[in-house]
Image 1 (cartoon, rainbow, N blue to C red):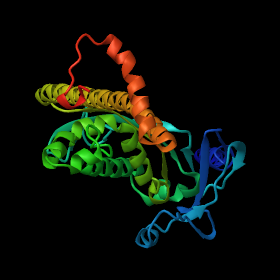
Image 2: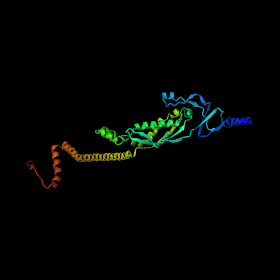
Image 3: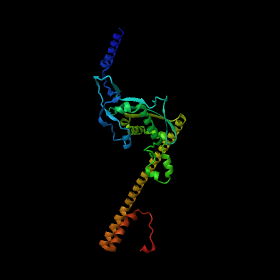
Image 4: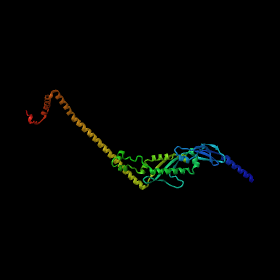
Amino acid sequence: MLITAFLLGLLLYCIYRVVIRAFYTVKPNERAVITSFGRAERMGDQLVSDVLMNEEEQQRYRFPRLHVIGPGGPYFKWPWQEVHKVDVATQALDLTWDPTKRQTTIEAVTKDNLTTGVNGQIRFRISENNLYGYCFGVDDPMQHVMGYFIAVLRERIATFSDPKGKSLLTEGELQSEGGPAAADLSEGVSINDLRKNLPLLNDYMEQQCRTTGARYGIELDAALITQIDPPQEVDRALSAINSTRNQVAADISTARADAEQQITMSKRAVDIATNNAQAEVAPLKELADTLAQVKAGGGSEALRAYVRNMRIPLLGKARRIVLSTGNRA
């Protein structure tokens, strides 16, 4: 009886291990790799490569490409084989995620030594081309990727400068006299620059994390940094700074508009005066040409006769006539 029960139990165990557990399926959002005695099935001598990595990184992250089992089934495996399934769907994770501690925000220091809190999310997916790096290359790949992302983010925040930092004044005004004061006026505050340029910061983070797929088997789909907040007392001071800067910008715009208006009015006044002068000079030039033609045609006598005839209407309008002694005759 004992031997029969032992053999029956052994048979049931073999059926369970060899027959029932020998078949498995892979869901549409999953990919699977098989290991035989702990060694993953590889695709020959092919290695995972990425042109974005430098030579030193390519030597460090030499991961083989594995034979990946796609969705479907049922598939068969031997008892000495083990199936490792990975969810390759796009997932989202908060920046504050850390399995070693609890935190509500990520602290970072700006270039003007201001400690700020950063919040947001990252979207990622498991790289099908580097399942070895995700499953076997790193002990906790997600923790590695988050640590790498946070380190790059803090470095970028510490050195970030607004590419439009001189937006209040033009380049010519900054190079004119009083340039240093103008430069100080147009120089931005780091927290304000970061808030205004969140898309640029997100794009930079995505570019810096393009090699995570070849390093850790996790591809960064998007970085969504949504909030950068300084301490409350600093935020109030920044609000006052922003109000002052906006007022300065408005005053500069108003002064510039007034100056342009005055210049336009001066140009119009000069044009009007020029036209009036030309209108007064034109009859005199015409009269000079007429007198020159009369003298050229009839000589001095004709010119005197012309002048005498032109005096008659004027003498008729005059109330008093003053003659010199030499002209009484």
